[in-house]
Every structure is written in C-alpha cells, then in structure tokens.
Image (cartoon, rainbow, N blue to C red):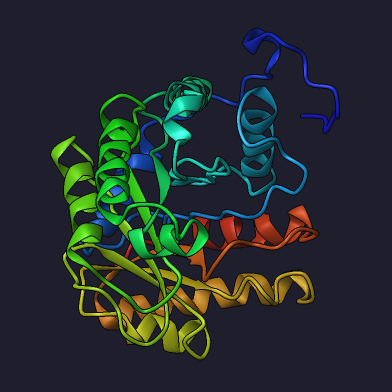
Length: 288
C-alpha cells in the first residue's frame, strides 16, 4: 500500500489486504484458554500521526500499519473521535464509527482476524470533559461497547484505564460487550494494581515489560511482553529475542500469551522491527 495524502472518496479504491484464514482467531482463542497455539498470537498497535479520526483515511492508515507489522492476529482499533464528550451524540458519531468498524472488518475478511474497539473508562473520559455527567457517560460508554460488538462486528473491547482505578461503571462497560457476544475483553491499565482478573489485563509503566507481565493477576492468558519505548533503538535481532523471552516466560508460567506492546508503539518505528516481533512468534513450536 502506498502512503498517499489524498484519499479517494470511494471505499472500492481501498486496496484489499491479503485474504486471512481463520488461524488468527483460533490462535487468539487458544491463548485465551491458557494454552500455547502453533505460533503465539501478536497484537501490535501504535499512533497514527496525521490520520483523520474517521473515514477512509483512518481506515487506510489502520490497514497500512497492520500490514507494516506483518498482519497481526488481533487488531486493536485506535479510536480518535471525541465520542463521549457532552453533546457528542448530536454529531452522529455512532453511525460514522460503525461504518469504519464494518469497513475494516470487510477489508480484512470477517472471521479472519478478530478486532477489538478501544473504549475509555468513565474516569478517563471525565478527566477530558469534567463538565460531563458521570451517569450519562457510563450509559453512553456501555451502549457503545455493546454496539461495537453487536453491530460493528468486533470481538470485544479494550477498556483503557490510564490510572489505577476501577469502578462499577467500568465493569458495566465490559459486561455490555460480553452481553453483545464479545469474547475478548482486555483492560489496559497503568500502575501496580490491576483490575479484577475476570478479563485479560495488560500492564504499562509498572517497572518494565517483564515485571509488568509478572505483576498481572493470575489469569489463563497475559497480554504484553514488548517494550514499545525501545523498539526504535534496538537492533532487529534483539527485538525478536525479547519476543521469544516473553514466550519462554509464558511457557514456564503455564499461561497463554498475546504478544503486545505495553502501550501504543510510537511513530518512527521501522517495519522491519515490527515484523521481527511477528516473525519470532511464527517460529515458536507448540508447547505441550
């Protein structure tokens, strides 16, 4: 795919990625069950500088980043729209965002690779728009989590808790996604205190990627293992080595693993370093 600045108006102009089989979903589901599939599932995501918050430009850059990573097994969708600000419902963002979710699903092949939508926690949203009503926000966030799964075709949501916080309203967001049929819920948190282990958790900013993995609650599957802050500076062979060490740790801990960064991969990380993570996962033999 070429990185052009002028995006054509028609969805048909988007280049179709290579067809995906159902292996990505199978690998993710196997890891969630606590087993080691034939190739550790990989979920890499990063910032999309300059990307529009929605529409064809957003879809194109999302797919280009995924292609640069070597095609991930779990596609975490960045959410750049100010979805939950007071009065945002008057701008019709739900329909616009749903079109993006459905379009990405169609282009990667529905059923070929699971997608998860990014949903901020209630506390994080209130920090951005403190004038908003907490009860309204809780209902809006839960309703969107349900819609992203039931109508947008997502496998679940990533709930973002940038501070060590957890509330009944946040639990309600995850419940809404599960009620809609979501089977992959990830809580992304910062800090040493993880939320309840009823869902997958991912740590960032604890004291490093290894300590972060170990600090997670006892779950069947952990998410993490890649230090996104060092990706741009490390030789390619060291990037692959970090991925393999995470896999060895998971095998010893007898838990599943989804290789992922601690947080968004910053701009400027080369494609060969991103693909090194994917290639390391492909070389892993099934664990018994």
